[in-house]
Image 1: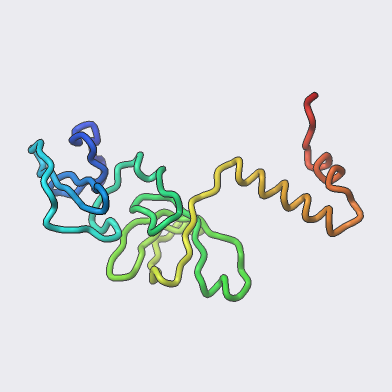
Image 2 (image 1 turned 135 degrees about the vertical axis):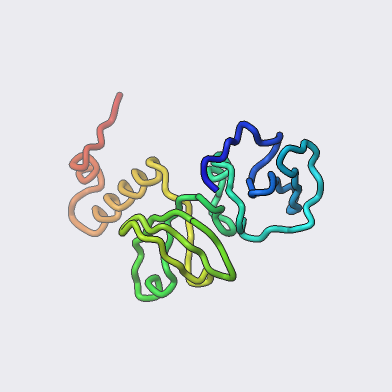
Length: 163
C-alpha cells in the first residue's frame, strides 16, 4: 500500500489496511471499514503489524521495545555477527513481517533481504546528538588509554568552550 491519503483517516487511526483503518488501544485492535465512521473491535488481532501500513508519524514513536513497525528505519545487528565480536550496526528499513521472518531493505547494498526475527537485534537509529556523544566518549576513552589528555583530544577534535 503506497500513496495513502492519511488526511482521510478517521480520528485516532494509526494503521491502514486495504479494507479500512485500524488503531490499537491498550493492546486491542479496533477497525473502521473504508467509508464508515464508527470504530468497532476488530475480529482480527494483528501481530507484528503484518499487512498493515503504519501511519508515518507512528514510525517516529518506536522506542526500541518490541518489534519496529513496518516502514520504520532501524539499526540492526545479526546475533551471529555479534557473537563473533562485530559491533557495527547496519541501517535498514522494515518492509514486512511473516511467519517469524522480517523483510528489510538493507541500506548498505540497497537490496531487500529476509532474516529470522530471532536472529536479529534492533535499535532505533541514533540521533545526531547521540552520535556526537558517542564520538566524545570515544575521544575521552582514547585519551584515558594514552598520554594525551581528554582536554587535548577534545580540543583537537574541534571542541570549544564559550564563556
